[in-house]
Amino acid sequence: PPTDQTVTFSPVTPWDGAYTVALTEYDMGAAEVPTLQSYAYGKLDEQWVLLAGRTNGLHGFGPSGTVNFPPKYQNTDVWVIDPITKETWSRSLTDASSGLTQDMIDSLSATNTQVFQDGDTLFVVGGYVYTNGEFTTYNALSAIHMPSLVAWVKGVDATLDAKAIVQVAGDEATDGSYEGGYFQVTGGSLNRLGDRYLLIFGQNFDGPYTPGRNGVYTSQIRSFEIAYDYDAGTLGYTNLGVSPSGGDPSLYRRRDLNVFPSLAPGVSGPEEDVTVLAGVFYNGSGVWTVPVEIGADGVPTTIDPATDPSVFKQAMNHYESAKIGLYSESTGEMTELLLGGISANVYDTTTGGLVYDKNYGFTNQITAVMRAADGTYRQEYLGDFPAVYDASGKLLYLGAEAIFFAAPGLQLLPGGIIDLDALTTQTAVGYIFGGIAADKPNFGNSVASPLIFEVVLTPLGS
Image (cartoon, rainbow, N blue to C red; front, side, top):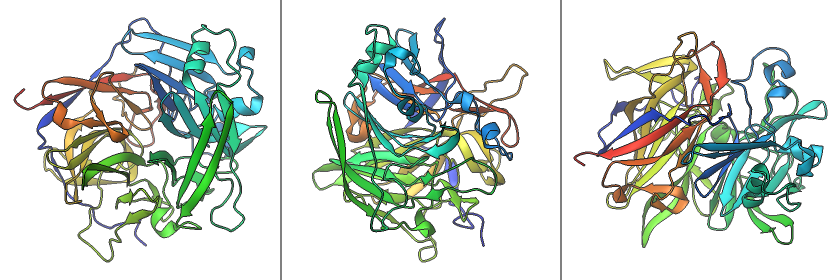
């Protein structure tokens, strides 16, 4: 059988957009900045609120789970970073003043959680963690009241507000529609369309992460509503159904993928949906190439490349990475910039062709996946991360599991998408923080990155 979802890939062409995108390393001065990857994140005003995730690099591939995922690198600190004033604050959840149980602390130091921010509330689902002497995927939905959490981290409040973090466990299915606990997912994505939350793909991995062991992929979208009242300290959810029931691994066995809100021309202005690009592992070892689209009903749709060979087959940036969404209402085109990460192909700048890497290496290359007004996709190559070297002089490969934070004051459309038509002059659109920094595309060493990059967009002719 083929390694990847498709034997061929759609061509990647040089960038021909109406603007340029430039990344520059951003200096935080004397402020302490953490090394973090696969973390949970939100924003309070211009400040970033970061928790969970890991403080070391890519997991190992040996026979020991505690060597591959050393528990000491689980991040138990909450960080607040202000890129404007160049200040940072941190406090450990293990501090007695948090008032949290060990179980809650463990659940909030998991890696590859799924997160969504609604106003001042950060919702966190699942994640993979070492707790009570074993590895597991947490089955919890947490609601975090960020003003209370930040006040505690900064020392404004001596103790953490008892209502700042509330949790609810997910039910198990009685009808076989889904496996495990409802929120027992890691490496997926949490999004929302209307009042419907969407827990998208991912897996339930139980036990140590070692070669030959697989988690149970959800291969589905779980739709639910959240009932949360900070003042009352209550949190609950209603399962609105899963799609497809029981999951469909032939199309949706995906994790560690780029999922993002998208806009498309609608009857009365832009309409929001969710786009899923690529991810791993097709057939247990390869990359997925054909996008998945999810509408307001929470039902995923994708095109079978066997029945439509002309379908878009994504060639580059297959793994979850920093990403930036832009939409032009004047053209109806949605653009998602994918910055670094892991890729099955390298763009050859000399020939304009693709060079396949069967090991799926870390990459510094940046591409844009565009969805035109007619729904067709294409991918273009913009350039690379700025060259950053480690202490021994090795080039670092960046972007995997990093996060983009939009700059304050930017005009944003539904879904936090940047309004491209509103950008008429050179604009700092935001920052990229953290993720994995690797010293080789394959089989090298890696660390969690403390690097911050400022992203500047310049319209041509401005």
